[in-house]
Length: 396
Image (cartoon, rainbow, N blue to C red; front, top):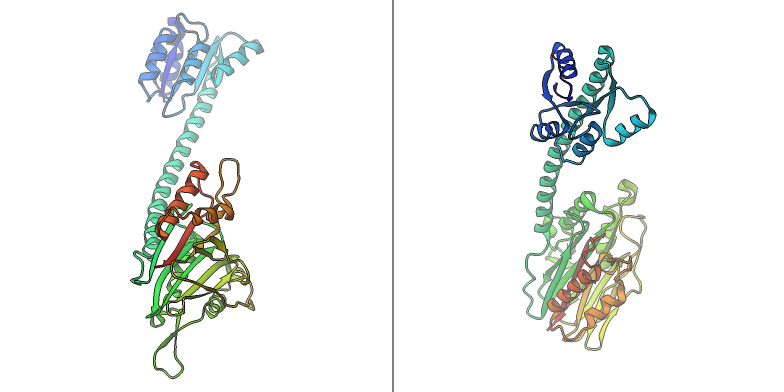
């Protein structure tokens, strides 16, 4: 080890130095406390300080206190040399920051034992530092993997709204983790029908995100690619739109989640018929859709079934909303209504409806943007505890 000896008596400096050099250590010397402080501060390679108690300019305990207040890349063990043996003195030295004592006159076996303790401390610190480096590297790799997974997940979200002249579409999405358990989409099903869904996988992070990504590949209007939102007509002449309740039933059949992974998901899926302006939807444990009219916003929470994946015999049925030109429909996940402020108060459905009812915001995109801003302002910078997804459309 590289050891600094601080003692104002030349005899003791030389005596301790000879012993340590004889054991193969690299020895430095200091004649007083201030000089020792300067040397230690400027030399991170010093492994151990052995200091006398009584010294001019800066005593041993005061030197300990000064050094313990300074930042240092590695821990510096300190041994106090002293002829004192009162308990109060020993307590003072330890409280000042010393790790051990060697009494004068110096006994070589005692000094060797304390040097051995110091070596073990330094070995343990080096071992811990290596573990921290390994963990840091592993975390960096994991962060890169999560960022890549987030990019994949975001690529599955709609990049732009479907080209439906009769409708305006909009959405906001904020994940509480790098990857999240919410997934949504809007798409054309056929010439006069548009589909929209939101799902929320239980839990957060990677496991929820993996399941949501898998579900997105099933919830597509392309049956030739494994999608279940359209099905072949019995006579083989083409495809027809699958009723929403049958989509929920098929999801529940394919994903017995509670049995396999102790997970489940809530699901809200609807189909807008542009010819009749009827909106048919199924609700599986999810907050109901919000209808926006000139009179304001109201939530449709009636009916519905249990979340997907809990029991194989779950039953689902379609509900419907009659719409008029200018009306809108909004889906949201409970991360929006359950966002907390600094007093642990939830944003709540009432505030959500109030914000969406504000007629000052023209268009669905403006309403959802204002809602997102209000949720952020309500939380006052508090970290989201769940993913926030809001998606909707308005008839022109």
